[in-house]
Image (cartoon, rainbow, N blue to C red):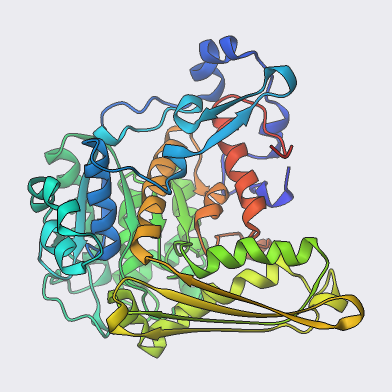
Length: 469
């Protein structure tokens, strides 16, 4: 069990002792005792997934789910739909899908809602994004046309490159919160949803440094919202606050500060709701979090890692603004330092030069390309190089993350887990952690996978372990 997996009592209902106290049953007894032993409520009724943003990522996600439940496409890349986890050991071990271990919501039970600064419905937005071919959109055109964005809670100062007019006319941040709460209640009622999850798939906001005076306590944050403190309270914070108050888990898919502040942790504890973030881990950082452990495990040295990207979608347009890029830069730079630690191996990682660049290049649209130049050294200090060129599709990689994060956040809520969901770090570039207590995030992809599997095992009533499958 990784120590990083242990949550403080303040911010999570489950601690290390919960793992110790788990008893081992054979599979028949586990099935009989599932509800009693794990206290995971069943996934009954409709699950509303409200997506902030109705751009390329959101519409690719929605279209894929709608196509998959008609049997017209496969949800490739989704851990909840394809991955299998070993449960038990020795002669009793077996490999089960997530839904065979824990009660996940079914694709047929999902209802979509969204907010966006542009008024186009999900079909129009999907066609405009040009991620998917028309033949893969038209079979679910009727469903997509019914998904019409609600007016967004938006402040142009936080995303200067966007100029949509489908926005709320709110005088203060507190009015934003109240409007968003009404949206959520209305959506839930009109669609007959038993539960909702809110996930941010909108643009990266400008960087908001954590200010203890505003972000340190829930009372201070609420006071700032009511005082219309637009410098310290980003619109995304209003979405998160509203979601938690309405009993909905919140997921931050961009590198925004949003829920990565003590005030939101306090609210998550108060409402007993899960929160997770930050920043969907899709392309270059996925490679980095998987490849850096190879360098560390092999005890090779690292002099430098230069990463650059080109992309031309709306995300690239927003990130072309320096203030917005800085938010992303902070997120992407945080990966290496917790995997290859200079304090543990000063000879190998004592002087790493790490640079990240993102360039807006419209001809590529959603087809992002990432280059990594890695300067390593080996025996007696002799230098070597590794070069990685990843030609990927940003929204194609992100869509399954939205599905997994929403389904697993809904599961966590029904399991009574609240606060920071560290087991979801696997899906995120800059995993949330309690930095006020000196905790470090876990960025090593393989450690993150162990955390994910053990959380699923635990919620399913199985014993967690770290054996290599």
